[in-house]
Image (cartoon, rainbow, N blue to C red; front, side, top):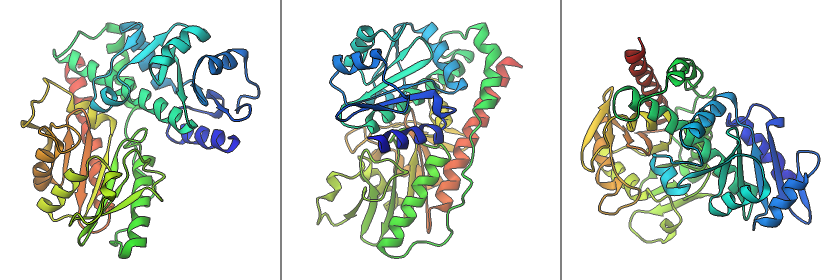
Length: 379
């Protein structure tokens, strides 16, 4: 458990969710409660006694996240309701409690996997491992970030509630601090050959996507087509920890391993058929999601664009309103597309390098478009 505590404390910092090791206290129950905080306060012992959990994280996020959370708590006291698709599916809503009172906090955590305390702390739990608490924490910060900027942008342009004066004054500075960053390590140009090289290339690409902060939590997926099979990350896998979590799915249906594969396998396969590409990256870049939610909701089957990048609608999976019916056709034209409220996809031929660059370029475009739309109203 000590190793788990150190591992996820490191991930919180690398992902930019906290500033330093003193900004998060991680607790894991083995024979006893272990922590990086030096001691286990009575409040934490009471929370473990009240909840059916084996892990808990209390984090003080970085300044940008704290501003976002504090503002949302003022506008939606008691319960913050995200609007992006992934947050609606996986965390639903985010309870807000005034203080770290064990009983009130436990009441919130019995209903959801995490909550906000006092407008600046995020508390999350896991029933099996610290990984669950980490995922919930990352998901909450993603959900609040996207909601804050999407609500502000829509409010400025008359698609939502008016934006408070204080928020208007702060918006340009907040956007300047949120500029996307590119990965420092370019991906190889040479296409992988053979299964071992494909798996290594997918691992490298997954780490690059996470390091560039083009995905939060465990959201996103990656695949590579090689002849009659598609290698694809498993559902729920973390893109920076892919070894052992990649399935080889024969396209002739001769294997059932597709059961554990990403729920977007069908959309990947259809995209390969229409584009002739062999590599796909899917992430949840924050400003791509924010810009996809700008304006009126996008009806299923309709399309709009952001600087030439197609934006489509669709649900995860192959149902009647699934991505498989909208995304691949858009990918055929641009080899990249954004799914409204969901995330961005990029494909290419050869190695993952071009797909990664395209994914990064789409996020940068969406960030700059968001800034321009704010300047348009604020002058």
